[in-house]
Length: 383
Image (tube, rainbow, N blue to C red; front, side, top):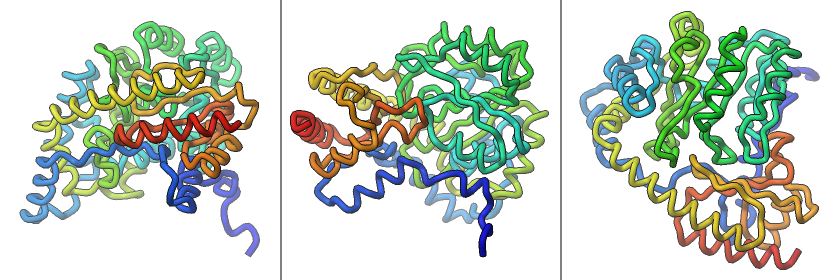
């Protein structure tokens, strides 16, 4: 049957990240630095809390928004750790940050609505918007992957978008939002009729002393939606628990999409996350300190190889330039996989702004990273 799949779905592809990860399966001897998945174990107290929830038969539906005590704890965590204020009634637990994003886009977007999305950026933003019939308008980032504010303001005036996606700490670049950048973004957006979607899934892995977010401004909170979660924070990617924060006028719509999509987030995982917020923050801090060591090691290794690269200040990705090799990012990564037995994600998987770069995830052990840099050096000498 021709046309059985919607044109919107046909207009997108499987994520370039997963596409390249899947290729690695054909090269069992290859080292993969493709996935954004911490190699740390879920903290034992979280596992015990999940088992305890099963034994206590806490396996029924929760409220659509999630268990109230967890939403209260998230509210406290955001306020105390990041100076971000949302009450428990303004928080909804989701099936990972991914469902959170889709529920937000599904609430906002009608056919033809324009959404500003950075490039390079996590590919799900563009795909979700296209599935829903929206129009993607990319905004440029500078060479250090901060926002080009002059061009952004010009785009907003010209295109009149319904929403803008802001993503810091960034996948794939590891960039963060500085105080100056946050304030500049606020000054551009505060008087505009535009919804701000701030993806802060890597907030717990920001390496600087102070954390800055567009969600910290009280006077624009009515048009800010924060999406975050526990996958990276507690190394529980497969347990699928995220959350959305939004003022009541926005949450009233979001909860409808969330309800008809999934009803509620997994009950037992919610109890695990509650234990995590109460008693496992030291483990998060330890994980962050280890990522900083790995970041420093990989950054020095890439610089020693002569690559142009910015020092990441959050998440666990580094995004070196490969423009000097005059190879498209996909060609470079294909050859690195076949000839060098090292798998990395081509920059074009993150949009047009990622061409000429590649993403390396340093969420792997130091031993893996050491061997990977040796293989990368040998491959670069070949070409």
